[in-house]
Image (cartoon, rainbow, N blue to C red; front, side, top):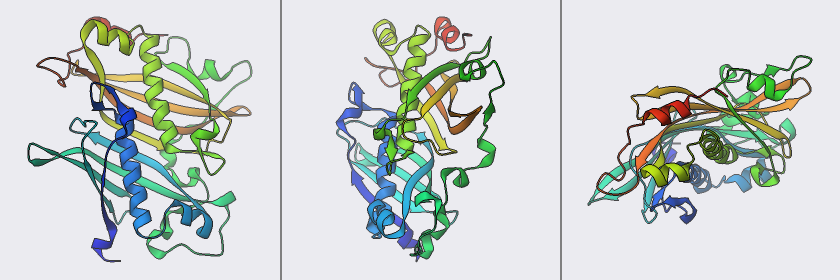
Length: 309
């Protein structure tokens, strides 16, 4: 393939569902656009998810997606996505919109894709050479082992006591992986963890007494994301319970907080680490002349974000 063969450009619009505050689109739906762009890259080459599954015996999965959010996206924006397959095997994705007659970059993203074999077994039909290196037996074999940290549960302990020890600032939320969180009748997909990250943040804020509704009513602030990464490190399966932890690691210049989500599935006496995520969060002013500008976090908000359980 020539260098031009590695590039795809596609025009899309964000889903209306993502316009939750004013007409701004949230980070989850930006990542959905990234996913759609990557899928389009495969489809234009005649190897979309359906073809890969039925003809080559592999399931296409996004296993790692990092994104830098640079410009607010509006609900009626026409987004142009440029998707490039790099020599490393990763994809680079750029989302652009038109602003006042010129291009504005909304998001820059790096995406890792794995083509996971059915039942971990090779099939008779080999993949095309330019994507053959993406084939793996499982998500675990596609991940960076340094980002995975399984935890042992000693006698007398349980998942909660291990994940939220006394004096911890960690918030825990457990959820069941339903069929609509999964791909190929089994495996929890990347977008399910994207939704989980959005929800665990919302639940964490409510638990700390600074719910989205309260901050909107009292200060006119809404959550805003500057940077996010969601990385799958092992398979999680349909109807397993996924324990998601969330903790604020650092306050950045009193306007942002850097936080981490980790997800685990208990199997026997082991909490298997299935996904990890980082998110750089803050608050934007939602109305008036300063709309869209970052808010300075007050003392009560800072205290709530870093409170011990």
